[in-house]
Amino acid sequence: ISNMGPRRLRRWHGLLQQRGLRISSLQVQFSLLATEPLAPGGVLEVCRELGIELIAYSPLALGLLSGRWSLDGPLPRGPRGALFRRLLPALKPLQALMAELAACHQISPAALALSWCRSHGAMPIPGLRRVEQVRAVREALGCSLPDDDRRRLDEVAAMLNVSMPANPFSSS
Image (cartoon, rainbow, N blue to C red; front, side, top):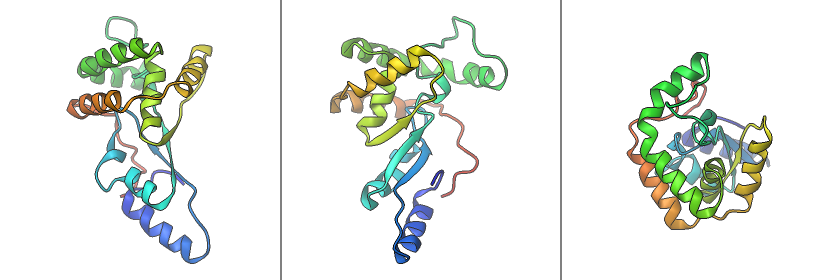
């Protein structure tokens, strides 16, 4: 299933369990720029409690966490470019920390963002269009992010005054 909040997830889990069925996975937007699943009582906590795998879509936040985009270079056209122009100025502290940690682990920023998702117990499902994106996934699979690095990323992400737009189809 996808885009269920913690209350609805609990409700549906109970209803299906009464019929001998179980929810195996929940797909939600989850990244360093969409951290709502981490909230106390949020879907990540509920998934762990109920034995449901959390699948993270948009783990690279439309590419903002890939290390590819900055205000110094060309940006995508259309709505994505407008979103990037709005979000990028506030991402400098996160981008700096990601560059530092990626260099330390000898992986790309994209691989670091995917490893961060995995360090929280989520299975990221990035969109792949180019060979370097496949390499980032391979790098992420080979990287086990230390708890200290995960905490540093969590702290910086929590201090940002911007986030990805919420999916309008998500429930509570």
